[in-house]
Image 1 (cartoon, each protein chain N blue to C red):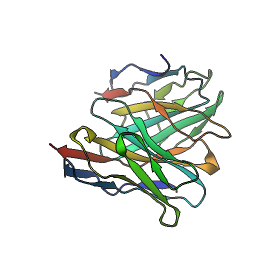
Image 2 (cartoon, rainbow over the protein chains, first blue to last red):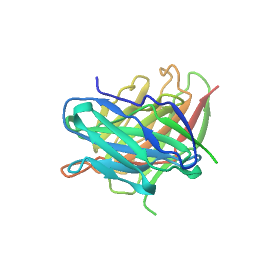
Image 3 (cartoon, rainbow over the protein chains, first blue to last red):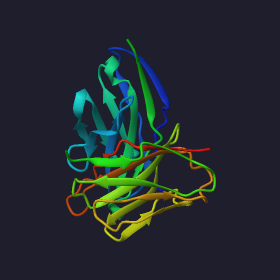
Image 4 (cartoon, rainbow over the protein chains, first blue to last red):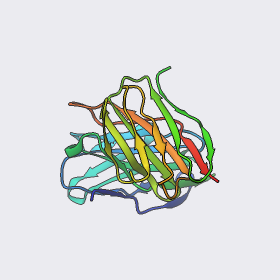
Length: 114
Length: 115
């Protein structure tokens, strides 16, 4: 069965530290890839997406992610985090064989110490 | 304003009762989704619909039912057969079809508590 794995359940960093959140998926076909963010008390919103072209994609608020097809990975990065980045982050995959089926990982809670 | 409206925001029900959660969108999206969000488990797909009068089971459809009679509406019924219905339910919509990137837009969620 298709799945999305986020191995970091809770990450705690100090401000200005660098961030990398892992995301791996299990599906052999073509995919679209997403990172969504859920700030405390707010609804989920799109952070960035990959659907073709340059595997390094840039999103809002200084986030970026790299699609490595050979590793089935789409890790999220930010060179210097801020306290306002405290949120839960979800990786998601849109499976091309079922163009509307979108599955999510279990999420990573990011806590930033001021 | 364009968006997705879920109601009610909070709902309590007794065991053995069915309950229906409403989801309406005015984004003119073809595809609509229901997810269940539990701590530590992320978002799990219950049902999704690509077009009116058509829907597919997601990964945890047992104990749930949906309908899609109108493009803008995708109500979810949590039946008494759902063994652990207390959860946070999220509705989403997105464009569907050639050229679509699959990006989803989410409602604010409905929190169901079974007493």
